[in-house]
Length: 220
Image (cartoon, rainbow, N blue to C red; front, side):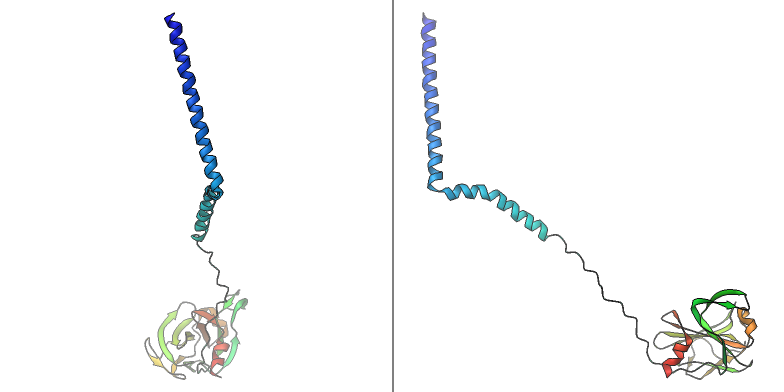
């Protein structure tokens, strides 16, 4: 009999506990519903806060990305060739022309090759002069073009005089003016012996080959 009474007591207490929990849940639900009814903007703000924060983060990431570099489309301008007083290194007839864009036939070597200067024929021993004011850079005996004088000029020009005689009149470091004698005509260029006595006259501008005719026209 005592066991049955205890069981009824426990069941009765459980019933009241469940009733109290249900009442508490109903009260909390009513309170939340009442607050949302009083201030509906609060609920909307809570819902919108997460997407807004994400959007702000996205903008920040985009803003920190480096801007693509715009390529420089402006064409590179070649340096302007300066005027310079010039003269032909020797009075004579041009027997072989400048040819760097197309191959030309060399009668001495019997092959086709480029030609970085002009060959001016004259009697052996004829004086060869500096084509413009400048400084003698070097004098030497070239293995294929014979005795050679190289002169540097203002504005990035360099002139080369080859197939000269052994009696070179200048040396490295000498200052020369247009018309100064630097050597004599000979036929020491081994790759151009068929041409006879002549001067092989070459020009470069900014270390690039240049047509000697264009160089001589600077003085006109």
